[in-house]
Image 1 (tube, helix red, strand yellow):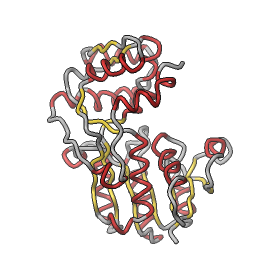
Image 2 (image 1 turned 120 degrees about the vertical axis):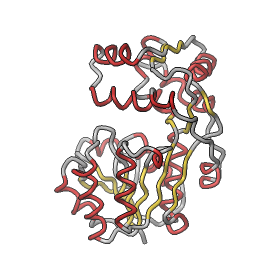
Image 3 (image 1 turned 135 degrees about the horizontal axis):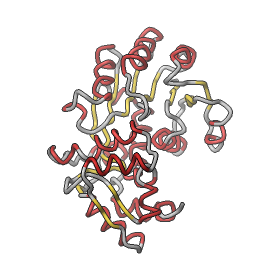
Image 4 (image 1 turned 45 degrees about the vertical axis):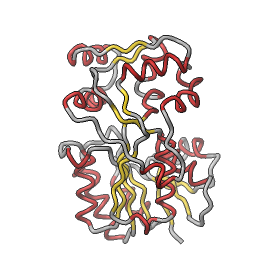
Length: 290
């Protein structure tokens, strides 16, 4: 019987992985890696899952957490970019302990961009010799629930330097279900990489149009200059690192080929990928709630 350690267990993706695992028949043991055993426990009270202390920024927590599992669901918290400092010792420890499979949440297009942390993490995993599966999701629809939420709620605005670039999309719930299916039967997905998208490619103007119809209120899209965007977010007291991540996610795609659409979500989850309109319908109360 496999025992799974889920890192980032209280985040958007981690919670969806756990939710999906609770809805599928399996005989796995589940462990949630959390930074604070007391405060994070309240976020997981609805799930039959054991908690253990795991903090990416505290390498001293790695050994005890990894020794409790043999399969690792791994993601990179947005605030952690120092791959050599944190992920190198983590992967090395996983190899020594004998982790038999790593499911790593990467990003679409990672193989073409050596400067992003996910590229370096994938290489560490491959070089370790540990069997792996790389999930490479497209742009998360749920960004409208998180980093883009304040502008949407307060200003009815999408304010991003994305120009007319088209983005492929994916619902985090679909990513969670795909991850769960792979975690249950990892041997079927050894050393595979899957780009996870729905069947749409949309500009942010088109997303604003869909949101306007679905939410029954006018949502405006504004694409500022890079400098205007940076200083506006600084005035809003957005952390500099998050601003830079937002620039990387939304500005650089203007100069790149639109990522491909794939059918891996449907093939692995055995369900059609969620459309953007379906996402809006499911989250319409949250999208306009302060």
